[in-house]
Image (cartoon, rainbow, N blue to C red):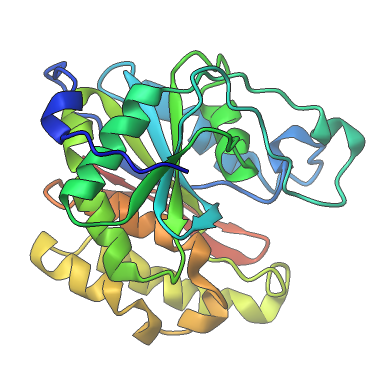
Length: 280
């Protein structure tokens, strides 16, 4: 992993005139959208993901996505020129789900631009030329952008999982939205594997989801403070025993801090409330 010392001005792209939104999306469970689903558990979420492309102001120049499945000592960016490859980091699923393809190209220019923006904000950053796309990226993106023809860069979470630093990273990356880059946080608004399917989890998950919706759609000057204090929310640690699937929301919220926000998707899945949010 190498540090990038270029200045943001050196790497800035030209604006298309249309600002891309910043999204927080659910990525489902493992390869759920590519398996038989006779009970329609994932139907609503899949429909939401399929509708993302048509909801954008124009085709993105590129996509920058942060997933709950990559953590590192810096905010690192995938730096491959060609398709970075896929990391099948799920277990116990049918053999065909380990043969999925999604050959989206990398975007070294975007990795360099993102690293420069974070470095200018005083945040630790780097570029990993060998890292592939984990399932928090390729599973939902294969649904949302099946042609795999838009360049994609993945960014890691920062070890330590500090919500304030992830909000700060999102703020630093906000200029990308004016350069035609779609910023996506890919996680789950409720992520307790032991609670999925347990009827006792429905009421707590709804209480946390109500809090999260209120916090993330609060006025911009209140939003960050509320999100930073997420552990004080009702049933916070039941909803997120570990917060790696919530922190992509912090990045999306930081990148969309100056924008209007709305709840884009909400549904009870496996007996728990799940949501998606859109900034801009």
